[in-house]
Amino acid sequence: MAVFVLSGFLDEAAPNLTGQIAACHENGLRFIEMRGVNGSSLVSQSLEEVREIRRVLDGEGLRLSSIGSPFGKIRIDEPLEPHLDALRHAMDIADILDVKLLRMFSFYMPSGQDPAQFRGAVLEGIDRMLSICEDAGVQACHENEKGIYGDVTERCLDLYRTFEGRMPGVFDPANFIQCGVKPEESWPLLSPYIRYLHIKDALLSSGQVVPAGMGDGHIAGLLKHFSEKDGRIYLSLEPHLKVFQGLESLETDDVSSRGMQGYPSGQAAFRAAAQALKSVLKEIGFSETQTGIFEKTSGGVL
Image (tube, rainbow, N blue to C red):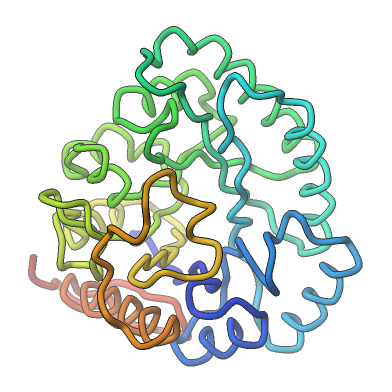
């Protein structure tokens, strides 16, 4: 039986480290999937800046579950070498922060072209990224994302089988929904390869992101399914309920057209996301046994 450990993209609560730490304590998180901090991407920070981040986090009793990196989030026909150089720098960052997981992607496809014709280039690029991570003792985990090679079930499965034992997955139900894929049809096929989950729900009708359990991601069923695994599984909150600093650089479509809900602040949006997830966990019989750690304690109702 799985133990669920809460983490999250705290740059959605606050752009600076102080605000992110406050949101962790407020919402009972001991882990961060760090993507942006203090005004820029974590992987673009200097090593001295990262050492200071580590010092502050240690003092607050917080750690990283994963680096929410942008690697693999370039077009497949863009030069790869600068990307690999940045990844090598990220490995030094991972060492300082003592984090062993890194979220990555499988390259944007040229608009209107069949992804199948780029499969070879995608596999070569992923292989080179994985080799850099493996040399540093970091496990790179592929996230399904709109517009990349691995954006639908079949191509994710292709990647996981090709790189089996080297590259597990991050399952993001909202991203599947925004690609017209029903997550409940994907998770039985992909779950053997999944390392952790992004908790982000959405509506099939519009693609709008909503709190966990309020969309078509079948979050309760998703968690019930993954609860049958053994060991710890991170549940990384990625609310996307309010426009936050840096969102525009993460998305290929117009974020102003998303119809995001009217939360007064990033902190409020993150709080709503955390409360929604905890409600779903309680619904399926999980209780918080330690701060941010949920274990099965009853039968629950689906």
